[in-house]
Image (cartoon, rainbow, N blue to C red; front, top):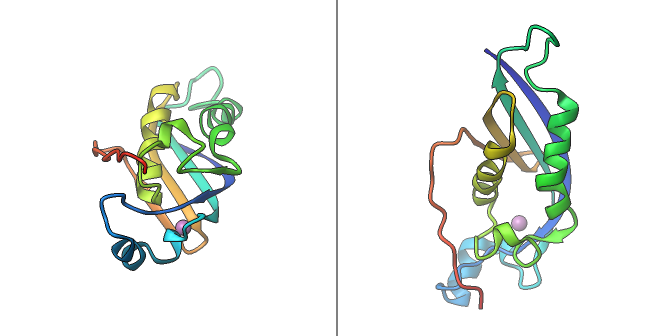
Length: 145
Ligand code: NI
């Protein structure tokens, strides 16, 4: 098995809050990410596809094709957007790096072929990231106030 990775970068705003918490509790838990108007991150998304190279091309998946999938399914929807309000597939989801990663997985795992989505890493900064291998996780959806 081989593992092929494509990396893309995007910038987006988010606000972390749980509408069922008090304002004080939201501030205590989410701190800077609870800023009422949101705040920005420069994200890096790494998507790894596992497979056996096609003998006729030597490719697990054509990286141009993988880039196009990431562009169409993710980048165009999230770059320079407010993740809480502008992105239909994140509506009502607390846009932590964890929840964004699971949501991206659910979208990309359907679209990636040949090969199989193996790992997603989402960097919220150079020093903080989330890594996910696709074991099923339910993310609660909250009614936005
Ligand atoms: Ni933040």
